Length: 134
Image (cartoon, rainbow, N blue to C red; front, top):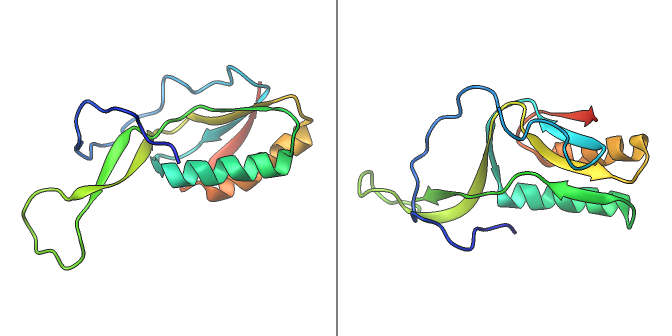
């Protein structure tokens, strides 16, 4: 799973995902991309599941880029803990995703294979996704 090596602050506030993604919204590295059509938080486990789905479908062909990284710590309190007492321990890390953000890119394979690989990866994502050609 993807986790940051070092973070400035151990715990973050939740924040809000407003607007449309300005940066990282175009296909830059590969020929085909998977773009987020909604907003939300994608956990490191979901990114890893999508990556494995793409790799298993492609076997040994092509090159893939992951354009997102889970750098936001998500905290969770233990079960049966009363209200109050501040935030809980860090449970996992997530990547905040705005609408229009490019999630994955692929190069070196035919379009129909890329389309099917991204369909499988999109099924693992908590946001709606769309296949994009350069």
